[in-house]
Length: 208
Image (cartoon, rainbow, N blue to C red; front, side):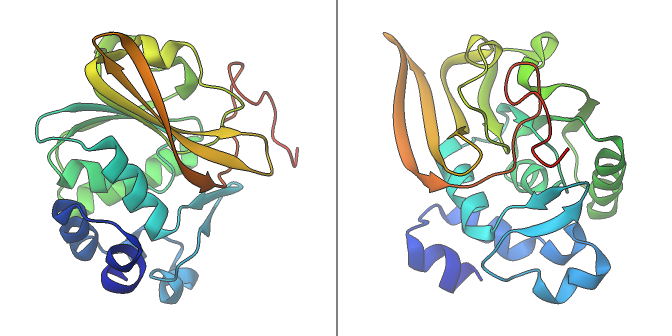
C-alpha cells in the first residue's frame, strides 16, 4: 500500500509513510472487510459512513503537516483511522464525532493501540471546539458546501485547515493557512466525501 498507493502517487513525507506502514488499517474496519483493508478505495464502516482510501488520508495529513506537540482538531472521528495517524505523528488530537456508536468503537481502538494524546467529544464538529482553541491544525473528514465560519476562527497563526468543499457529488480539497496577512487558500485536488451534517453545513442526511 505505502509503495504503490502513496509514495508512487506523490506522498513524500517520510513520517506519514512510516506511520501508515505501521498502523494496522484492518483494525478500523468491520471484521468482514478486513481482507479489503489495504485496497485503494474508501470502505463502509456503518451508519452510512466510510473510512477514506489510504491515499486521501495520506494526502490530507501531508497537507496539514502536523508537528510533534501540535494541537489538532479533527472533525469526524469515524473509524478513528485518521485520528490514529495524527496521534502517532505526535499531535495532541481533539476529535469530534456526532454518531455515538462510531465514537465508542473508535475509543476502543485507541485503547487497543495504546495511543495517547487523544481527547474525544460527541457533538456538532462544524462548531469546532472553542474551549481547546487555538489549533495549529484543523482537519475535516466530511464535505461541507463552504468552510463553517467557526473553524477558521479557531486556527492559530501559522496553522492550517484542511477541508473538502463542494456539493454532494463532487468536492475539492481546500487548504487554508493563517499567515501574517490573513487566510491564504490553495486547492489540493478533487475528492469525494460523505456530507458534514450540521446546521453549519449540510442540514440532513441525503439518504434520510
